[in-house]
Amino acid sequence: MGDDARTSDDARDKKIARLARAGVLLVRLLGRTWRIRASHDAEVKQFRAAGQPIVFSLWHGQLLPLLYHHRGEGATVLISEHADGEIIARIAESLGYRTVRGSTSRGAARALLELAREVEAGHDLAITPDGPRGPAKSVAPGVAVVANRADAPVIAAAATASSAWHLKSWDRFLIPRPFARVSVAYGDAARIDAADARQAALAADCVAAMMLQAEQRAEEAFG
Image (cartoon, rainbow, N blue to C red; front, side):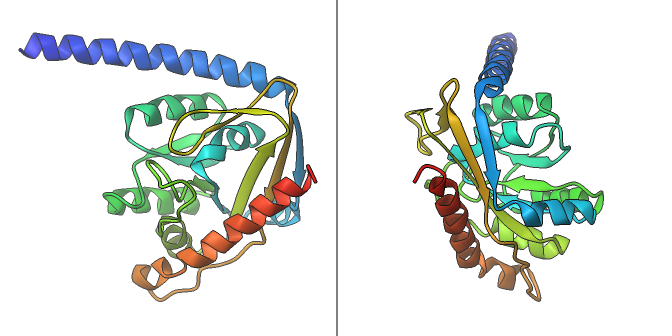
């Protein structure tokens, strides 16, 4: 029984490794063809120039083009511990990201602590408030709690494309087609000023409004 379990685990690990390698190659090949235009990013540049880490909030379904756009910047991404999370984590790491495994909604204490340490070390964070399993575009309180604990500004980020594939997944995962125009936009920065984590969690509606603003700005590029 033990040998069978180990064999199954080895086969699973090899499958994940193959998918991750294929994913890395696909993202790099596709990304080189995308025509990315960023807008409303003045505050992002200002915080970066001042050495102020940012907590980016982005929808899980828009993760791919945003990961590619911010590649090589050394930001930290919160990735789920599910099997698909392992594939995304390996792709993110190949693009120059740091990763923290876990969730801000399930077993959050360890993830929150690790994320706070990343900010203290000067790294930006990227968190998907509707991950890892949705519902799509719903806001869990993790972004607000982490930003409050880390005393860092929140900036919503969104991406859309002129032509794209959408996976048949809960988040309709966005994959811009070759040579697509990709619009990346950001919402206005905000700080979550709360006395404790419970109060910070009440700011989830604020984060949702920021996400809507970023999405609207991204879509403006295509009229």
